[in-house]
Figure 1 (cartoon, rainbow, N blue to C red):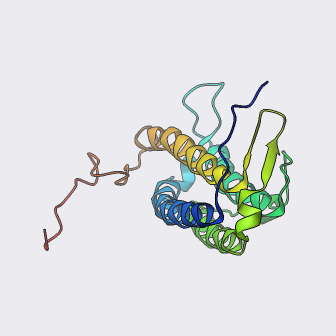
Figure 2: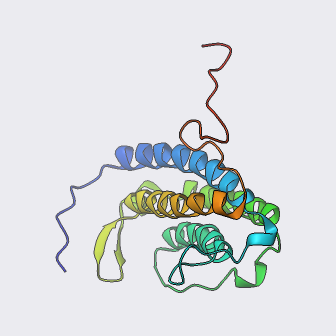
Length: 180
């Protein structure tokens, strides 16, 4: 598969893009943590269809793969599956949400250590595409948001409430801040 030409990134642009992406990823992580924490522990095996993952499988996939993906951007090489965190699987939704927040933040801090030269170095993604490292931060965000959307649709059928994501939900209506 051919990859579209990628414009040359300056060090300044790559560094600025990294900071913008890290701010967005940190916000998305907080939202994703709320969705994971909303899984009722007694309903972890819920799946809306026999072909679908269970709620717990999907939640672990989001948490572990987001962190692994960030780790692999830092390492400069992609390899899946990557079971490095399988022995750390939490037992409850609250523990998983906390594990995700802690390890995602740690991985974001590692991304901050990349030099401008490292950020602009092309990485191959399984022969599908080759992009500068910094651009893979967008793919991390897309992965997380995509699977969080799936998981959020599981919540009500499991007897839980859907937290605010990009505004209010039927369960957590949007309220204007007092300073607005």
